[in-house]
Length: 100
Image (cartoon, rainbow, N blue to C red; front, top):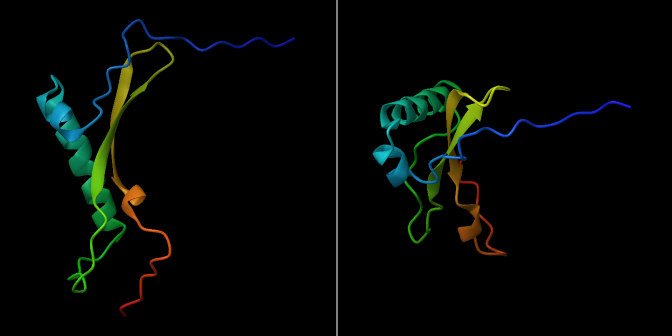
């Protein structure tokens, strides 16, 4: 029989849950670098194009998600920042036209 277990870090899960907390955190510079890295990655991968929204269209907002990636010893190895759309603000049965 194979046994496995997850090591629980001694430190509580202290990931910043929003932008305001991240910029006030003791690791604020590291979070800023993680956000800049993500923005550069999205730009180089041509994730989006900036366009003027059509008149009368409400835009879907986005927010940053923060996560500290830990090694097997429980120590923080990487600070990750992701930019995600707030898709829950969409309304059912509204169809977007392709503008190009």
